[in-house]
Length: 241
Image (cartoon, rainbow, N blue to C red):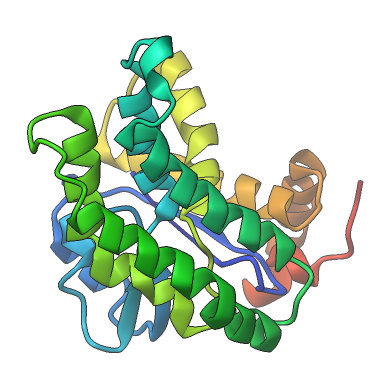
């Protein structure tokens, strides 16, 4: 199940699920064939060969998570001063700056990131390159992941509308993951596609401040009256609580 959604600066929020029978990169290329702009993703290599009109923005939360996982296996007495903690602190500094910039306009955020976030990022990559972490250790793998992803991790600096992480999409896939634990699987591809449609409607309604039950009721009542699909989108309906 693939999930695509609008970013935090969108006035009308869309959460769209799409079922495909594989994780092949061609699925994303086909879905985004008419898209132009920034695409926030995790580190999956399938996103790294998209057309040039799509700029992939890497996820610093994934980098932080790998250093945090490496830190958890270190004895408590050895954590202070460890490379795992040092790498995690770099990520924490970037996220702390983003919280400071939250109220800024996208133009202001772009400028202040270049002044404050870029030096932290540059310092991190310089440290990672010279950390000397053994490749097969957890912290070595965290360092290698960050260095391999540098090209895409740096792209959040290109525009003030971009985000530091892919957490927004991660949160959007969570309701489906929780539901899947209850029903375990879809019996057929057609059933999986229908699940994608229903989840798209419900999660988009929730993101736009609508009560999903009331929204779907209104859709089912209005659709037979000749309303267009556009008129039935969550942000075009009178909000009901």
